[in-house]
Length: 560
Image (cartoon, rainbow, N blue to C red):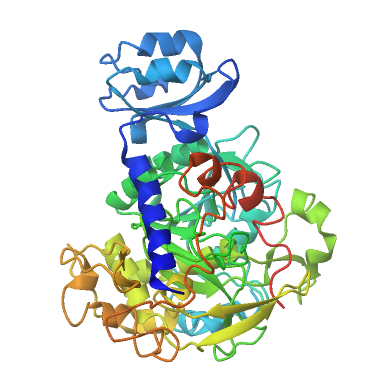
């Protein structure tokens, strides 16, 4: 790729970023809608008066608040973000935005649901053999619910943020609960079998939910943190990125949880095969996985062996950097391909894909799914094991520790085949594909060199050099990666392994040269990349109908 074309890409990205930097207060995807069409929106305020008793907070500082109440149907308060979810006519949003106390108006976007050989691959068998089981650590599973026979010691709280009860009608949440803390057995053995699960249902029988539902669940987890010792939130769900993480309401909620001492683990997304616009799957990390605070997890394939040596990146695992903010993601990778876990009878996926039902060695039913959704609870379980032994660790210390101790042993490239279509894919093992490396539970529990308690472990940002056409990590002395030899970036992202010179490096300081990062030309396609109609319109590869189809997340058929 020549420098001119590479520079043009980054000019377009910066153009897109500058558009979001404008003081416009109504999200672009609410514009151009029939003004009489009713839409679900999230209205975020600058000043706020909380009123938990009424479960709705109207701020007295807003002259438009009364008008909003008259014209819109109140859905729920989102005290965590100083916001409310409302259903109103699209045309009313422009009038509401004139209120100086309104910070921003978002659509209440849809979110979607994003152990055989996996446990020994990451060293979990060693952990259990040495007594590490995550005892007493609360994990909030924000998903499609949990079904099955669970002891009150394990499943300590259930609450639904969608219509109906907290039972799993989709199978996704139950499957993830099995990975985290499932029934002991040769094929479904939870990573942290003594954790306390808090079941917060936000996805319906079709695996769909809304931003406001997820935000409300995160708010609940923060509120009940002390009661249930909630130290981890697992988010195996996501949607397309529309704003900078600093504005995105899901990312704002993730940051609030992180600041309250809760580690947030998020699935990266399953768009690594997406080459619709010549981007080879790069730039497809979903929200809220684009948050620099979260631990964002990509998926590996174990090839159905307990050995790590033959494991390969799953071709569908979404790659960074993130849209708009150019953050290095994923942070880490873990097993996620063809994972066998617990089964939810009569659930939607079970009915639609009966062949994915498997018989366990103990005679019970299990279910096989693939995706970064399955990889995320592997990491959540590892976090619980670590916090079960070192309860005072901060979220930043936990994140940095798992990244530092992750295995850096990868091949330069690998090939995978879509189990459904037979199509072949080639993957490179770079910073935007595998992050800091492969989850290694044994190494994490054996290593006691933790970062300082006041340290920050935000995922780093990359910057483009228009003169050379190279992309560099931005060094920030306030973040761990820019501090010392112990916590310098070479400890986290091993240049000798992940950035093998024969693959990517042009010199020791360059993370990515002028090779194949963005495919042929521009990530956004061949039309008018600077315009919202193409960049964020329905032709975009990141539009809801394309990125989050039900057969995409979770993956029913993974890699062979």
